[in-house]
Length: 414
Image 1: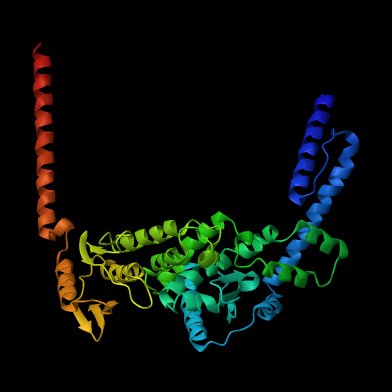
Image 2 (image 1 turned 120 degrees about the vertical axis):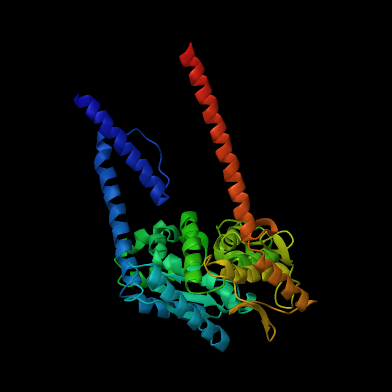
């Protein structure tokens, strides 16, 4: 019995030692596990645990009482951009998204630890939320999205979702070299938090600090935050259509913000399905042609403008139309034109830019809104069809009952 117990313990220590080698990235020479190794293995495991406990304390500092100090460090690295339009938009976005988060996340610390944010000088398309609820958006992101606030809401909503779920703190060990952690622990450097923060800054906005499950969760929550803040539900699909057009299907370059994410086309299509669902299956965009469909019938195929493609416009138009159909108990308002904008009740749908025949498009929308059923049928026709199908089903059930009764009678007669 004693021998078996020793062999079991030897096996466990051997596994732990191997795991330690993988965790620390240190190559070890395989050798038999003898009882004399137990002490050294235990010490090594203890040291690694102590190192990561030390790291955890430094991260907690940056994530809480040291967050303002860390924000200064971020600003020093990236620079603060004073673009008035970008800063005004970021103020609006953060205000509306923060209110949306507070309403949807009862356990959020956003009330006691509000996000700090700024526009930085980087010209690439990127944004990030790091430790301490510290957020920054590249001026390049505003420029590449042509300052479109609906699309930017989905970019920023995604980043705030990372913050709400504490992904930056959880992902620190992915971005820090084990050698750095060990060196800082060994030196007990009083400026360790600053060194860790500086190292993390080299990884923010990349896939080094997050996992794919974290990214998927941020996608979903970011969508909820943006829509809850009142932004166009089509903004997510439009954002990714723009990225697809400028960067292809590879996910790099223009799409650097979401490195290691699902491919751009897949994400666009996922958001497009959300438009259809939000509209109670009334509105859809044909990804191939950019045609906007209502009740499965063509409404409009938008043309390109100077600032965006027809397909990108299609998702934004579809998002506005989805808002018209979102409440099934509310009848759509009257179709009208206000200045250069097509309206349904008080809901803006689209501008008339590059529309060759606005009157025909307005008339077409009026007809489609009156076409309240499937395939061009009105509600009464749908109800009649349902009654007829139910009648046929009842007749069939009655026939089956008669056959059963007749069969039972014949069996009883025998």
